[in-house]
Length: 94
Image (cartoon, rainbow, N blue to C red):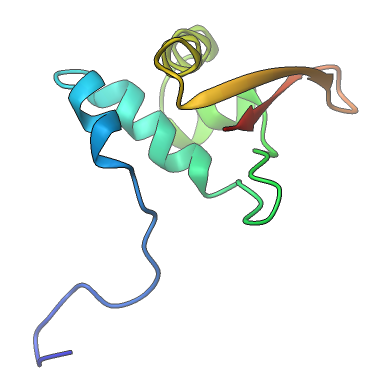
């Protein structure tokens, strides 16, 4: 790393083909990137709630739900019918 380079640390990879589907939808891209922080590397399951995603992205719960639905539609995320201890939906990565 050269002096002054700000690209140190861990990265969250986003497949290039996903960017094609999310052009102009910065909110859904942001929600995808933030949600990937909660993905188990081995099982690829996301372990977070819509409420938590809304809080950390500064959006509403309904916006997170719409964005996740879009990610399911394009095949980035597969929703699995599970509930957290609080009764919230849990989504798994594909």
